[in-house]
Image (cartoon, rainbow, N blue to C red; front, side):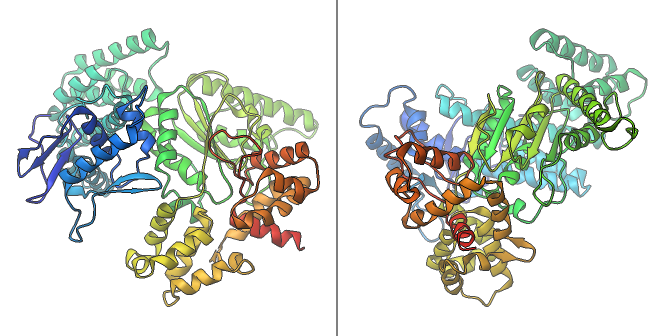
Length: 620
């Protein structure tokens, strides 16, 4: 970067920088940060600002191979040093670094950390571009880039944990640089971006969007031969390194430059994740999933895993997480990101032919036969429909083999619904959301969405009812989110309801939710009903599993149940009880410990609201 970094810390406040070597400055003077292990702890906390960082993550960053027995005590010393360096937070003099059940949380404001300032400026720049204010967008994006002093945390990248965080930061910086360069080209100022783009392409030769911007900037500057050479170099590199051709969008850009003139043209944008109008619960329910989102972006972004299953009960925020990831992975899937729901609105499963037909429409895939149910002649009957479906399936597999796209198959009821849709070759990836575990699919990467932690659930509730109202009675707010069982949908519905009933004290609403006979009746906001969503998951269970769940729900009321108690409640042998419990785990109706533990030692749980619904059904 050619401009000096923009510093925004108020006088007397320490300003930290991660976009380059780790530094801390006070009133323009650089501060000593101590020995390397202490800097690793500080860098890990700063890379996840205002978010709990588990002790295990800090330990892995400092001692990746063989942590000493005194690791926790040493971490406490390093954290104490960070507290001293940071000083108190805000006007209330609160501790900067606090320790809780989720790990260590570092409180820091936007004006004290360059990555937070960077993100704020980038969002403002994109918003300006969305309004059509290209000049304002270019200015804000440039201001964000002026904070970038080099590869993030380049002095600590020998730690694998810090290197991962640094890689994510660098990817964000590159995306903003691409946004800025394309904006400058649209403004008719391509020359200002040429040199920077050339340097970045040399460091990231396979990043296609950078190359496209470099080609455009050269072309618009009248250097057509150089622009065409950039494409030719890229084509040869792709063939040599990956055995692939450039994307259709990149090829189209190249062909548009073969003619004369300097008409600015950007590659055709990849398709956004396509979805019908989502219910309100799919928007804010993403709150509080930083770890799962990070895992999802890492797995899909590296391209090593082609199928990922995100599982969790109805209302856990699976669709919101999937769509958020699809949006953030735009540059990794240049040929598109599409979403198809596998169920209809009434909860019934769509046919394979219906799903293939929709995928075909979204991606421009056409089979060699008529679409099922449309133009097949009466004489063809079921055989004609089967032939049409087979043709669509073959065309879909061929399309996936030739493209790099992300396909989101949302709300999948079982393995059979998607087996024929998964790519057998090529670079396409599939992201599946499902209530059950879909254990029959392999090999896949699995991400299970647990209940929200108290802090995450309170953050979501506060967004809906206002932070001031939350602070007025934090004890009642905590009772509300716990009565919701940490289910994002239930917390959101509670917030939506309280946002309308502004006169209702939080304590009174908490009392209503604490009443098992009334809780589900209270969790309704307009046309969004928690009971309705849970009922849909209940219908997915086999009759035998429903009976078992009804018997186990009572055991879970005091915090969980053991295998011995399940055996007694079900009136069966130990092996039968194990199979019954594990069947419910597979269906997503019972949760089990995250770590390895024997069946006898495990403490199993039924989510509170599902247990209440099971009691209702048991009494029918």
